[in-house]
Image (cartoon, rainbow, N blue to C red):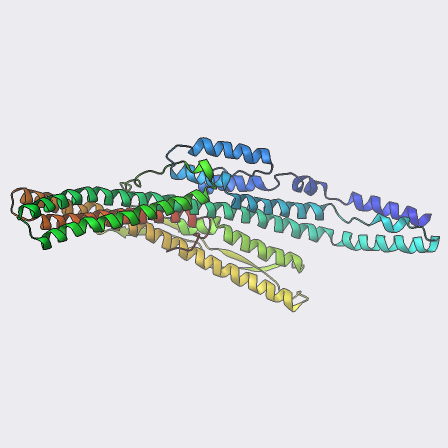
Length: 465
């Protein structure tokens, strides 16, 4: 009887050791999602949505239909729809929920198996069974605090991973929207040139019937029209496939695919991209760096490393002025504030196993390399957005006006019967090439601009080009 009382007392003691605050937080159906919602809003401008029931899924789908059905979808709407309707991101949010249940489980504390203590054996056997239960529970109780701390670190990692997946999906969707619109813009340009070529081709055929143009010259002019038809077919296919990728990312199917994208990308901004502090922002906000830091923290907790011996910094704080001089002799000066990225290092002496030392070393080196990569990617992204802007503006302001002037003069010469239709078509072909290159340069700028926004919060999906 005394053993039974001891077991019951132990159960009461163990129940009292439950960390109720952590249990309440981890048992929330949306535990940790507030962090993801806030991060998604700041990084993408869109709202993250976690649909956990069939009713919530249906409500999300209704909101999506209202956003896209029969409408022309812009980049912000596309990103918002993806964050609401893409099932891959919903699976990532479910992973966050599973991590919360792990934390909940640990925070509840040791749970002895009561069935051992009510077996029908004799008093002596019963006493031995209860003793075994209490011993196991006490061992669990002794390690509950560090296990809870480690579970909380893993839960914070899961939060950061869910945010990283959200940022990656938003970046991928924005890029897919740019690709789709750029493809439709190219198709539209070729279509306009095709109309001009068909008119010239019909004229050549008429001249051929009257004997004013030989068959070789007629063929030269017909082949331009035929080549344009093939190019337009390819451009239409490319646009269709690009839109389909966007559709997949937005999680649309069936009648949900009844939406449109604009015929052309926005014009270039009026001003050159300003000097960026992307490198500093990347070190502050990158999700992959935060996840790697938490991994280091988790390993330190797992191997009982309580004291940080020092911090390894990849750079010191620096302040200065960046002066940039453009080809147009424009000089811009802007203040620069750079900060280092500190990596906490723990004393490896107390490590009791070779495996622990290696895991810790691997995590530290991985974090250091990711910090180097993040800084480089931020610099590359800013260089790309500045360079592509200059290239696109050169095509728009220098090459295209000259080509249009050539087209106008060629048309005047043709109307004055000073040049042949063949020469007119050659100029038209060159003019189309210039328009296509201008459109490609503009699309490259908008992709680079999207990447610059992304690189502050995480790696660019698929890697930077």
